[in-house]
Image (cartoon, rainbow, N blue to C red; front, top):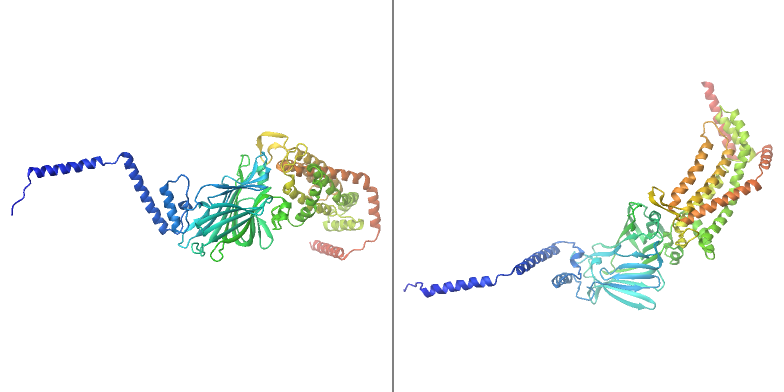
Length: 632
């Protein structure tokens, strides 16, 4: 065999080939920009593989995994579309676009967001806030609406981050807005809104078609609705006091979460209302929700700071499928917390207006509200308050007369009571027996003056609830008060006084002065009629303190209350003072009262069964006490 050896030509050939390879490698070396792009592509590939692994192994994914935004490149959009397509939802349809649908009615301006398919803006066209700015119930992300549901392969979707396809049509005079989250032309989840021309209530239907093989009905499906209430009134503390979460449950019962932070689970719910004092957002259902988890958080931590929001509300409501599909009929109400409007729907929505419970609510609903509505129909609102106050005080004047008459009787009997106290100063039981006997013979009672005062309390409290709930008073002016539903201001202070505020209101000052003179009259009469007894506090001293304490409380705490309420108390106390002066000077004659008492004392007084029993018990107690004293 011939031995092969390397010759010169072979060596030159190998050198040339090696040099060419080196040159090719050098000339094909990527630029720094190309190296950076390769590194980015490598990282994106790693992230994509990691995300795919997470989607494969995890039972729950975040909604951002399926969201398409305008700043994404084509590769990212294609990746998300492919993943959505794997679960049955396609974003290759026109629904996968960013945008809003604007709809206007006679009373509402609305925006529907393609992303999430829900109302992203709600403006009430006929109202403005204390700064003459439009009233928005929903705006700039203060509200969220979402339905979370699982797929057949145990993935979780949040509709608030998916894109819906909008269409706007007409149904007679009504406007219909359809927002569809599509898996195909024949498979979709739809939010259907139907708006009437002059109505704050709209129909809202959640329904689906062809999703029975996609949505997992065995997993819990939740409707989540949250809202941060915008500030609309001049006094943030006053508005926040009447901002709360109301609900109707168990066939007509109503309740609300407290003023502080609260969290509760309720059952058999027909509607949930987020009340922002004079404006409300309410979600209603034709078929009651079996349960709902509701929360309320106070966002006003410091009333001295200019606050945008009052409270934050949230509700989580489990939904049920029907035949594997969504089919839920609801209603939205976005409008004023006006008793007349809410009553017109006959859905128990008027319970969101805080008229008071029991007898207080009855007085407000069937007496004060209709009366004020009648008067304000032809009188300016401030004058209507004054006229209503006069009528209320005239109706209660017999009660005032009874109270004053009782005090006059006690004043006439005071010398005789003093004699009894002196005669039996060492025998409390005997002193009490003789005092009661005198009251019985004279036809007088120390409690007779208290009962009329107690009878006025329901009206007093009903009026206290009426004025903060009277929507018609909102932004109605009278004299120097620009808004009878808020405080009046005559001086703006450069600082804030705790419990008082940063302003001076005149109507509370006038009401405080009137209360001072009213109490000066009534407490003076009571002190003159009440006998002083040993072992009891000095009544006159206590009453003296009350004369100054009550007006001071009125002055401080009513400085931030509705000026209409302070106007009522001012006029009411003036009228009461006038009625008492008339009763004292022209109706009640103390000499005649004294003669009548003496006449009653001369007559034999027939005791009823209760009086006899009480007398026997007191006599028996007296005998026991005497027996114990003899043993000692």
